[in-house]
Image 1 (cartoon, rainbow, N blue to C red):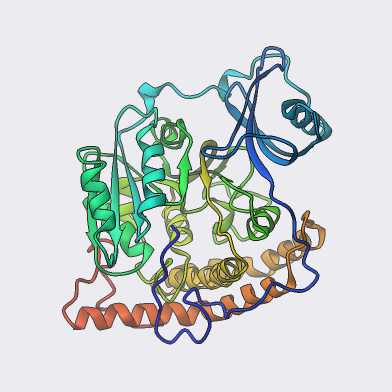
Image 2: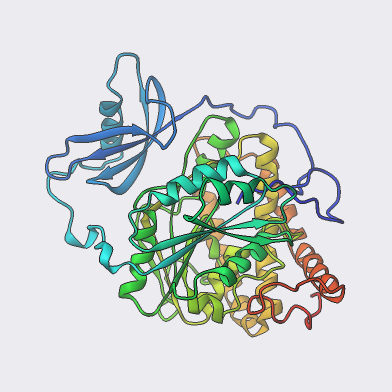
Amino acid sequence: MTYTPHRARGTGGGTAGGAPAGPAPRGLPVPKAVAVAELDLRAADGAVRSLRPAPGGPPVGEGAVFALVRIDGRPVATVTGQVTAGQDPAEALVAAYRAQGRAVPTSPPPATHLPPPLTTVPPTTVVVATRERAGPLARALDSLLAQDHPDFRVLVVDNAPVTTATRDLVTSRYAGRVDYAHEPRPGLAVAHNQGIAAADRAAPVLAFTDDDVIADPHWLSALTAPFATDPGLGCTTGLILPARLTTPAQILLESHGGFAKGLAPRLYDPAAPPAGEPLFPFAAGSFGSGANMAFRADVLRAVGGFDPATGTGTPAKGGDDLYAFVRVLAAGHRLRYTPEALVWHHHRETWQDLRNQAYGYGAGLTAYLTAILVRHPALLPALLAKVPRGLAHARAITAHGAQTYPWPRSLSRLERRGMLYGPLGYARARIGIRLRARAGAPAGLRDGSRDEAAGGAP
């Protein structure tokens, strides 16, 4: 969720996002705007079925284009192509797709890749936490109400509002179609826990997304269908692609990997840890992101929901989704990444936004690890045993990694500073929860923060 930031006490100077203000580094390449599009190829013969801009975007024309390639609607790859004057954009993108060493299909995909029948998807509540962003929220809600899922409700959680704009939007424009819940305490995890509490108890699945996305019409069906066939599945995540690449900050973030976790489906099973991830399950950033995730409702409630001392809007600045992923896996449930569950995300636009994001990523990472160890110290031996191999693996990846636009060292330094701050931010957030509890304020979702009043700061 993109918040209108809450300024946290004691976080030092700089902006409300936590990173001190600063100019863009000298010598940083300033890429031009890149169009975003979807190219759909026909499996039978490789012919172009359609080429269209990303939802709400301008038509594809001359210049650089970032495209999602689909085969009969199924996402298979992303490509970046250059459309020259007078050139057919679809031909340019097909050529870029071939240049990746990929063959244009000449036969239908295997049956295992076909979309699931809509009769197999479980009833679902979709939770959208938001704060003072009625315009983007309306765009997100329009896309959610256009889903092909046959049985779902949308619940908006209005987090620490200062105006009635969100309530007015939901109760007027979306009356009878979207449910509304108010959460007075700031923080994304707290808002999500309010969503868990207010959701329809008859819905076996809870999905979460943000107010700055546009959901593909098949998003919710693809995200929730795996729960119907795998009783051991506790969580699913999906693909997140950029809705716009118009500013240098957006392009730099996407060049560095953005929020996407690839186009190949993956299953994470604690009974069979993946060989290529020595920090499993603690390297939770590889599982997915909070803008595109769903949980089996009884599993999420059983692990206590989200830690209210993590997440955007708290001194911890993030890590609420990572905490939930690890808790579900540590409880013995599987997690599945499903790239057919697609949302288009509006990346932050300015250099300062990117600085705040880098600092927040670092802080959220160590804050969530602190939360795991404080609330579940029995996991400490497993984490310590994995650290040496995990660090060696991370160095190997860094040594061979390359981006179109190099990640500035100043952002890497900010991320490391955030990592140093994260445990302190988590401690401050927990102390704040205790002080509010002593003052008689609500402590949060009872099954999501039931130990907060009794527990101390780490």
